[in-house]
Length: 265
Image (cartoon, rainbow, N blue to C red; front, side, top):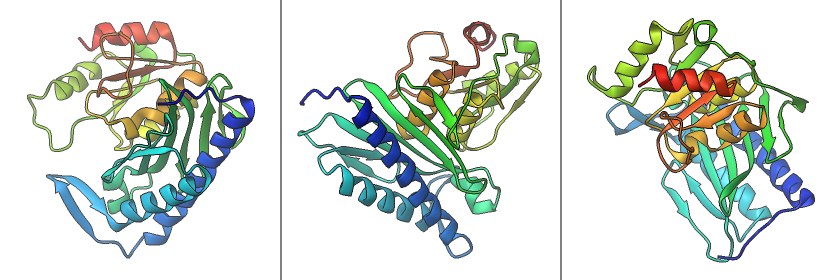
């Protein structure tokens, strides 16, 4: 693959395109409300025409701007291009179960991976018209205004979010971690949208979030948002995070992250 080192102009173009594409996808989602049908990809793992239509619209929009780039997405999208090491990582509807049930906690997530790092990331919540955006080395924003993590350092005062695997059972280690955390944090919630959980960590609304069952499209944009907003992203054992490995622990501060590593063992 060719090496790509985007400068400030290219990075701005990437982030601007990601924002526009996320809004395109969000409009498609809202347009499908009340007229989609639902099917299961696997037990309790839902997909609708809205997921697929949103992804198609996002990919078409980005391909028109960057025809040589590759694409990776939740709904069967795996389109790498050997002419470029730029890869768009797309979740056209993060929180499908919420969307299906009319619970307004879902989002479009788009990130650009170039070479071996995240360059740009956007999470768009169409129900609140909130656009969380980040560019590598240039901070994170919400609707154009800078955001920072909460700065929380103590587990006992933290509001936490956790993801559990779809159709899980009581013996799953993720369930045991969730139950263990109940006694150590101020409160722990499960919301159904990893992308928004990470965006909320970045914006200081939530102090930490962890999961061991996510895909790159669930976490890529959010991971960049958290780090650019001053937070930390590691694996559950505190080692270096890899967006292609389902093992994530995000925290408002490094000290809170270290407490979590110990608490979730």
